[in-house]
Amino acid sequence: MKLIKFLLIGILFGIIMTKSEVISWYRIQEMFRFQSFHMYGIIGSALVIGLIATFFFKRNAIRDIEGNLIAFRDKNYSIPRYLFGGIIFGLGWALSGACPGPMYTLVGNGFTVFLVVIASALLGTLCYGLLRKHLPH
Amino acid sequence: MIEFISQPWAWYVSGPMLALVMILLLWAGGEFGVSSTLRTLCAMGGAGKKVPFFNFDWQKQIWNIVFIIGAMLGGFIAANFLTNPQPLVLSSATIADLNKVGIPFNGELAPMTLFSWSKLLTVKGFCVLVVGGFLVGFGARWAGGCTSGHAISGLSNLQLPSLIAVIGFFIGGLIMTHLLFPLIF
Image (cartoon, rainbow over all chains, first blue to last red; front, side, top):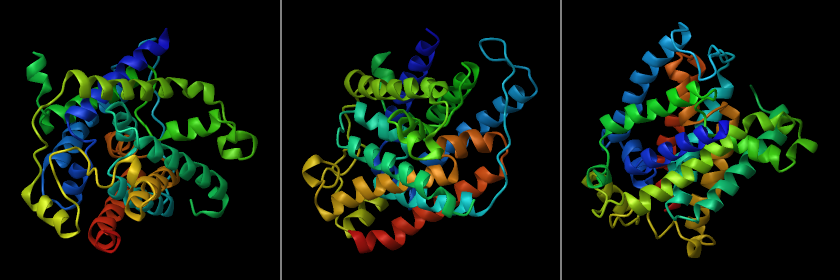
């Protein structure tokens, strides 16, 4: 039963992704060409609210549904991991026009060919797992 | 009401709603990071037997798999019951730029000349679908997160690594859009 709420939050997420047109390949192109404020406005305003919410979560002013404190782990500092990994991700984001959230949402939208994109992303994840030891972190 | 929410949502509605998703996930005992579901799916498929990176307690991540099933359902609901009859309104500058590289725009979410099953085995179709997906999966895991995990959750928590990752996302996206698109398309 605990999982039902994640299903409902996921449904909300899929509706937001679709109605905001974030799932559109064209919107991602607009963003990387700096020809529309839309994507920047979405990420920027989500970030402002996210910063405020995280501030209160970290002050323990808000607990989770079971009354537990919400733990935030600091990410280990490194440049190559985030920079190189990020660049590879960005190359793929501009090409496919979809980061992982939109990939799943697009399948629900009837773009079944995105199952191929998801399968390729799984293959990419698998290859990262195989090559992990040889990559700078 | 349905008509009202069936319009495309402005950024100042969509952004705060996205933050609400992050808040709800934290409140429900999860966190907002979609790309980690790819790792979980690999582990569920048995990759942990061969590759240690996938040998973890994936049962604890089932909530995130349920979340992405929800995302698919949400996409289905939005596409079928909250349909916007109007074509996508795209910046005329973007339309002109894409025309130059031979990608048409006809008001749909994605160019059907690339995103359809019949184009999968063409060079361009293979690039956007297979190469694009592969890079997203590989890069997200190397960087330890994607747009949700770094640009929203990570930056909200003032994580410097997330800022480096987001800068990387843009370096990659700009290289692809401005340098590689003219070569591929």
